[in-house]
Image 1: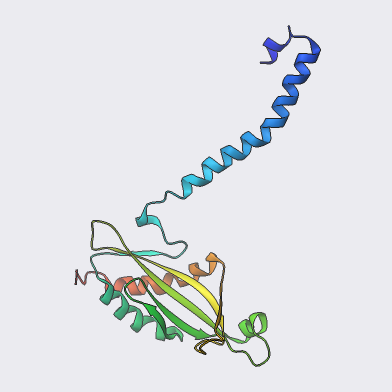
Image 2: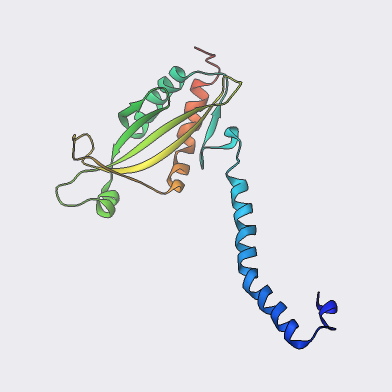
Length: 173
């Protein structure tokens, strides 16, 4: 374009430069949008975020039984459930959690939601977690939940691997 514009009058060259400068940021934004939307087309088998695992040849009941055996070993108790999609586990926040998120007279709980996503055409499930902090957990009408960053889900990778090893191979229901 530079070689072709040498024969153009200076005014025309300035207009071309102005147009390129005006649309360059727009073109960069569009290119970035195309790159990022490619991430939204992740196959289910690779979804779930940090720490997620795939449990092979199993069923929802086997996963829930395994989770009910594993989570209490880490201080969690069974919380609200949305069968067959998810089960939640609660743990009182430690001293650091109370310092960060608590307030006077309000209990703070860490809630881990175990999400079970069936993989189409198989007996496999993808396990992932969603972590939130809950104020006044279990108190009807006063419970307040706030999602935490997705990076917190990575902390539960070892727990999910234990659940996968216990629930794997249970076969369909």
